[in-house]
Image (cartoon, rainbow, N blue to C red; front, top):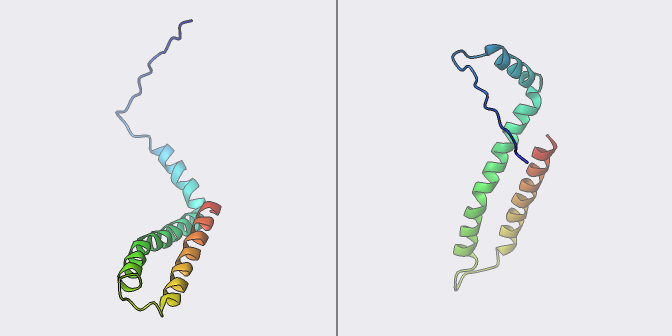
Length: 96
C-alpha cells in the first residue's frame, strides 16, 4: 500500500492582514480573561521564584548546625502560605 503525498506551495509575498484583524478582534472580546491570565502568570512567577529563596533561608537559618529552631513555625507558616498561593494561582490559571 503506497501513500502519496502532495506538496502545496503557498504565496508568502504579501501579508494577509484581514486574518490578523480577525484574530485580534477575537482576542479583544476576551480581554478580561487575557488580562487575568497575565496577572496570574505574574503571581505564579513570583511564587516560583521565591521557593528557592525560601529553601536557602531554611537551610541557612534553621537547619545549619547550631541554629536556633524556635522560629521554625513562623517559617513554616510563611512557606505554607506560599504553597497555597501557588496552588490557588494554578487553579485559577487553569480555570481561566
